[in-house]
Length: 261
Image 1: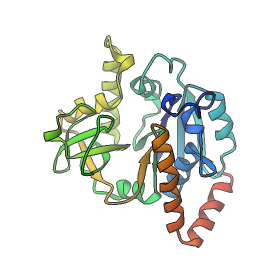
Image 2 (image 1 turned 90 degrees about the vertical axis):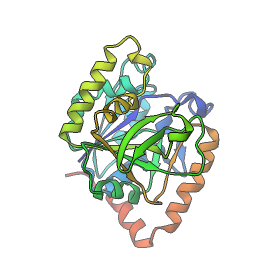
Image 3 (image 1 turned 90 degrees about the horizontal axis):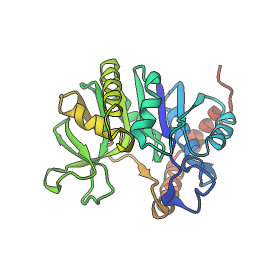
Image 4 (image 1 turned 180 degrees about the horizontal axis):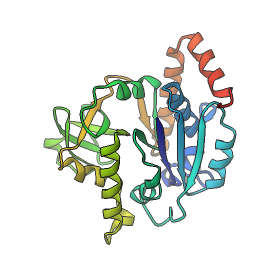
């Protein structure tokens, strides 16, 4: 399976850490955010990773060139400074051959979190990994779902219909990939395409009944949007590492050092 990671942004809310370094290359607990993601993807047998870059793309390419054990390459978004992640998705549209995963560049997750999504009984062409909590703030990418069917996704949903949040990771089959690419292209052709999120395409596709959800069922994830998130993410990842059996840690390290064949 292929994974596409959207990592074109600078991450201004993490300044000064991102003054000259793209968000995905910020170091956290001895590794970049990107390396944490790659490890979790590789642990689930993802065979190909495409990192869509923008700000500081050469920094990302340097990191990617040093990663072994998985096939990984970059794809540059030349108009990253003018667009939001809908535009970044548009740049990557030719890479979207199913099955594939789409992952936000600032979403960190345990291997078990992705495993749950991949092993779930996915009855929809597009499936979002979702979580629940007691309260949601203005920055959360909230969802409204009827059972396993997604009805809406967005930051501005009315509180009375919200029953979860997207964690920034989803999987597509071929019908879902085709529908998503077509909707991304249509939105980018509009007057406001450059300032829209890719989840606006998912929100519209949900109305067509082709988007489902999959709960992460208590497994770990975190989002790194600002400095407070960054501090908390360090603690969260440390707790994941502490809970891994020693043999799993050793085997995982070996996997990431071996050249892909």
